[in-house]
Image (cartoon, rainbow, N blue to C red):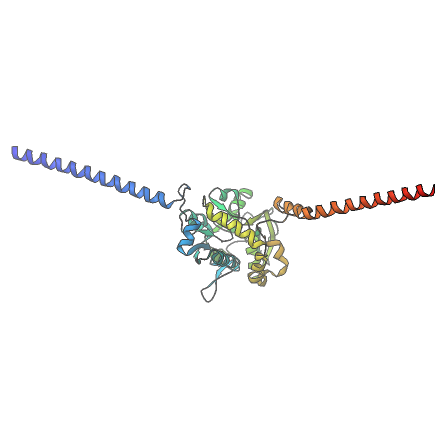
Length: 346
């Protein structure tokens, strides 16, 4: 019995020692994991991102784009990414001196992909809103946008004020259409889909009376598919589309803003429109949709730019002053000559 007690005591001591050792090991691993996590997240809460220098050093930038939204971001029959956002993305890669890795995203995943570091940049028809700006950093805009409503041409929806309460509206989760309709038309039944393709199929199958989405996208759909009409081309406020980076990634954000300003000097986004959107929209929408150099027409920045352009330059001011002085000298010389002539005649 005495030997049994001694063995029990030894076993208990051994278990305690192992337990303490295990706790110590667990604590060390947790600390190492935290340190590793801190070194990956760049001073922006829990967001994970790569700085501009890290992107350049890697030789590749990961850009989140749509793969099913023709003509903005889609994969063609050859498996190649095409569209308005893709044209811009390729230029970014070229000017950064890196390859572009396109990462297909859905509307609802755009913020998540930035926060988790899955992408460095989002170029996926990302409308700027105050709520989104709390979670990501938007660069300067490159396109104008509003909401639009498309419906079958045999039952066109031209107003939501007389909406049939039995009907359902198709929306894509994660787009601005969902919160807008929820806030302004709380009794409207929403039929929500995760992808553009599924929303399109729902409209074609008659699952909903209409589809609310970015007006650029529903106009494109109506032009590409017979039997549908955009009865409401501008719903709610006029907004802009811009690139987005992880919150706090100032090095990439600053570079993007400078890039957009520089591209504006060569009318890059008009060239982008003409290369990727003209076949869909024609020339009539070009100046309405395109934002050049990050300056929205009619904005305070635009007014300041116009005012600056109207102000005379320093050279012009000097020239004007010189001309005024010359005119004064001429008048004084004429007056002196007249005085001398009068004196001589007296």
